[in-house]
Image 1 (tube, rainbow, N blue to C red):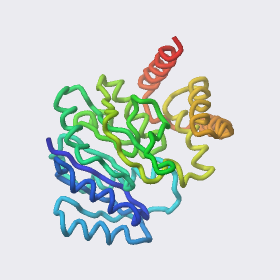
Image 2 (cartoon, rainbow, N blue to C red):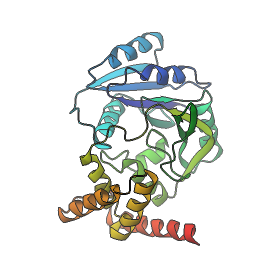
Image 3 (cartoon, one colour):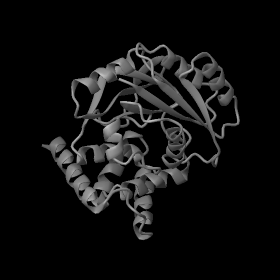
Length: 282
């Protein structure tokens, strides 16, 4: 199975060599690794270029965009830029962050999953962060969700869900659309990926409102948004985020912001979310 990896990167000079080293040591090598240097002001480009000289399957694409770090749109626009630079001779495509260390059998294991069941549309392992010298699970989401830092998509699935949406919520809507089109999502708890920078470390107040906006654009509606916001705020141990999220939801609703999904998909998503919540309660 051929796989391509696209890595959006902004000022990752301290960490990207660790990520690339873990990729060139994979038991099954990627056919292509494209690093999209999104306007970095440090040595990110030079480090990637040095790897590219040594490993012909690695390439660098340069992009310029605003330096402001808003989750979702900036990173996916960079991903899109990388996607434009590759052909379609892949079996699955990966969007990866530039601050990860993959276990050496990571992609060999994903290939085994994709090969074992042709209805598996997405697959991934789990992110671990360092705390007091130990690597512990970065517990921000449910065990059936693949983190935005390391998404792998079967080509057919990727096409059917319309690729990745350049907006916050992209890494939730992709999985919900997978369900809508009846694809399976495979998470593998044996695959521990080291996440060197905790999620959301650089997010601003604007970004916090964006989370509520994302819930709106996913078609959640008020009650599901309230429950999801409370759950996320508690998980992050910052209860006041709940108010930021709801603020973002109402702002998006009052400005009639466009949804990321069709009305039919939004209805499916709401029904699916309620079903999952009921399963957890009963």
